[in-house]
Image (cartoon, rainbow, N blue to C red; front, side, top):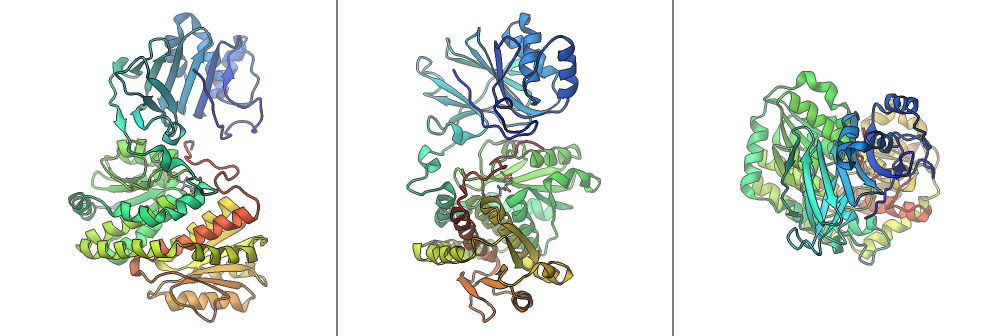
Length: 532
Ligand code: M6R
């Protein structure tokens, strides 16, 4: 038995003292923890008064001390009592030096059990506890999901596993689920970084996202059409996909859907009724802000539809209707293939809502095939050459309009998070209201252009930037005299967000590498953001 933990700092700086595991006074109980204990200060004061000493600034350290406090009840009961005192969202794993048991508890943060060699072959079986499946995918793809308020007790001697519901105070049975991913999918397979591998996988993943049961697309479209008030919610890249969805639904299906970023969604509860539909988009299905948004919606009896990559994730299980985007494991912190799969599926749903499912499917299949053509070494080299020209710049700006405005925002996230260059995305029309003041001689500005009704306006905005000294990088189906550097993308009509974001993903990747940054593990960020 052993534990390891990568800490994403919430309380106290990243330091050895603040690293997990944390121990009780005698070093008998140890705990690793993901999440935030909201009432830790109050509990810490109580424990200090009882004579417990603390070595770290973390909220986590109170947990082993609380277990120690109840130690005479036995390990399992002590953990139950200890977690009964905690407020907040968390997943913990606890060990006891004097016991052969490992105990996990989940409330709000993900905790998944991996089971190797099935449940029957008890002599050989091995168990893994992790917050995300790729952590143990090298060993097994058979999983059991803990729900909130559940505890798992793994006994090393008996090689047994037991689940207990802490609210109902009863043992519960779990199904063993094969998630269908294999370890190879979570390897770099010859690529230097996961980010580049995942960008290149878009040759297949968009097509896989479209491979949905026609009947369920139809019935989801009906639910969207019949809802009275529909919202999109998501965070970061998934949030930008939601905003693109807002435009796509308006343009293709004539349907008004509001996008609210998940961390703000609970503030919109006044507008929710039992006829509202909330469409949540998330790669991991474990983002705390998204889960809070759907909890707030559920309180008003809103129906939840989700687009999610990780099967069996909290969002998948908590949704009334859920679509898997089938992108396979996404390991790089920067979301790439998940984003384009989400865009493909949202576009397909919009066409289905407009009663034009076949037309939408044809467009997206053609788009997937054009993405396959785009992602060749020559194309990548062309973008790398651009990165070599601009990688020392401090700031970059990206403009787009209509469907490509959300992609300007998404381009900025990609560049910021992996290369640490200051990047900002704007709606082209907003430039004159402030951002133009930021343009200096040679400032790189990307214009995302499609063959649509706003093309001329975006080109005019690019001209305005150029007139003030900016260097224009055009991502567009056709070259234009305003472009200092042109990256060609196919003309795919309403699917333009998919093809326009891909070259920017490649550019962000190369900017990161040229600046000596590891694009897979950006500083200060985590792949799944499981804290508020
Ligand atoms: O797993 P999710 O899709 O819910 O994650 C949401 C964001 O945390 C995520 O998209 C984040 O913005 C990415 N690192 C961006 O590349």
